Image (tube, rainbow, N blue to C red; front, side, top):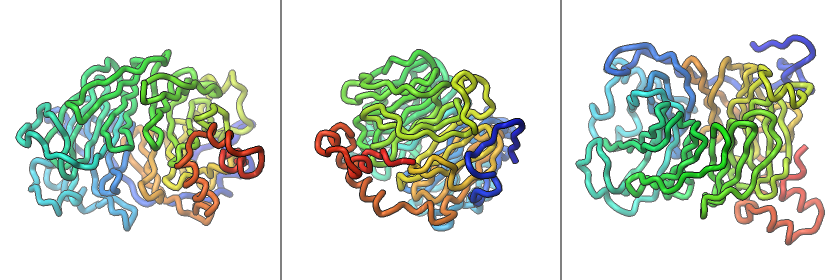
Length: 437
């Protein structure tokens, strides 16, 4: 259990014992696996975790260049332990060792050996409208990814390469252009299979995975490492975060920076939009998460992980409370953060006083919500993943007012358009998320 000395604490009004605990549902632990054709124990960091959009698989970067897709049982909010045990007992057989029976697709563990440390994962899917032009391409480049049951996994590596796997087929290929660690990846949510990569070489790159994986554009502007990137829900904009607190908003029609957000005192390391696109959340090593209006650059709320809040000079240094990750619930009213103080926090977007629920995880480095918003997965430096339930009390149920606001903001995500139509008042403040406490 994390502890604090002196005059600092992790929470504003409550002790840890007074805050609801998010119950742990299950764990994934590193096991003996293959790497470079030799058996070894995976002990490296789980820098990235992800669920498939259809909730069928959980992707786990379990260390030593290994990525595993473990079947996820949505009804039970747990991974399929029997499938994982079968995989291990069969000497870690790869997907090519299994039949192509469609009914087995979601009932087996799939393993990818990447031969380089894995730093990022992202799933992408598209509405199929063509057949593959060449189904015998094996593990080579191919012209089109269009076809039935297309589900792609992009894997960013320490070498700078990005590997693309077709989950239900045998095709794979690599995107080569970055020179350093590919820290994060994001597929456009519009089904176009446009992929953006955030890299320590100070750039973001845009890839057209449908078109041979061609590199479309290099987005420059960050002065240091780019830690994360996230598409807006309509794919028209992208947020990126990096060293020295840089937070950029990009117009994806011309790949130009349209806004720089100022507020963090240390590296901004994670970002994600709410499902309506009206709020951007960022996490930073300054022990804070910030909610922004991405259309105006206004700070809507701050969520501190140390109290009393640190002065900028201390927040910008080694403060022992780096906030390392953030994930927004599909309901848009809650989000999770991970912090070096050893706590996973489940927050209400509308109240920054204290989290709704917490859980203890040492050395957490990645987190993500499940597609139904009922589970948060947390990866650690040891390669372990813990899964926590977030439906701990009535506070985690979105209000009808919030759901109505989300519907409106999905249609009108640009705050400036709302400001033109509404005069000052309660409705304006509510629609623009200015009523957050």
